[in-house]
Image 1 (spheres, rainbow, N blue to C red):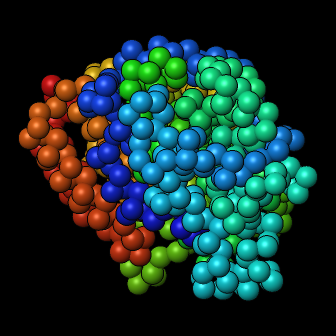
Image 2: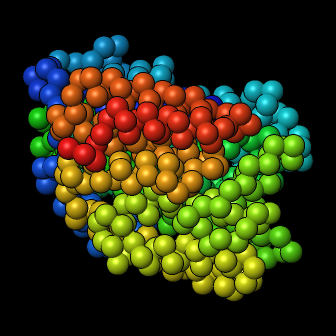
Length: 479
């Protein structure tokens, strides 16, 4: 995982006011608003994916395809133009955008920094830039036999790392095949939220032991790993344009659906890691990266524990699972499918109680949470989120902090800020908020971002004050 790639909370949250895909949106080079409803093609694709089961798609680093390297894609007549093309259905300067603006392009270089050198030394590694545990996420670290003639490991997280090894689908791609033809040939469908979430989480949580950022790695100096799919998508410098042609080929991006599916799959991936004996060792202590950092890491001279309404009420001094994203998922589940929401709440509290009940109890609850997250992916794929959904979700996120003290820890406040940013942008896209309310929302979100930017300086009272300002000036639930 990359020191550069793991975005700091403050830089991630500054993407709050940007469109969902962060892609320019055009219709004959004019900006048009991306609505929330009407994503028929995307909805069908996501629903079909959900029906096949989470994780059905082979990730780009898996399988046996040959990865061709950036140079193969970066020719001036392909994706290496200096400026966007006005006569093509793609920008054609994608390689330049990636190389100059995308942190993934710098992922390998991050392994050469003094911080990475120090981390490697503390972990007993001779060199971060040659260690498998580092390269698996800082580069497109496929086996030697899968590297084409122009492949360069130092390119970092490159074209093949996200779109899949180009050897099987390059011919279809350059001959003018359809998007569906390319996918059938092996192109990874990053436009589909479930596929994108699985791809991103394969490093931002770690889908296998060799890509897992454990507590040991964190203890050696690796930064904390906040993630939220919709905001990280917005943060990604887009090398595509959402225009009429894009919508016809791939469907219209749906930001709230992306946020919802990302939350469900993040819980699924976290629980899958917890159930994996290679990532959650069976010693006297569990793998501590699964727990909220602030359960242990805070100044004893500044005690701030307070009970949370949705917790199992275990009291102070107990390790708490890192459930910040699951809390956001709870609001979504309660809105979309109340019975599933009730089951999710019960399983979350059961996982918390299992700290006292033993390993078998915790594994049972983790299995239940995985089952529920899969059901929620399907439920979200079928849902066309409307304005009333957005207002209700915003009201639930705000009330949880003001009325029930759910954001006493920085990680939960961070996720709440990301959620309100996503919901505010969606309301703006629908034209459901005024310009004045949009400005007020941006100002309140800036204060929330500042309040959550540094774990050591987090003050729950400051964050709740910003929540109150948001509710007062942007009355989403009262329209």
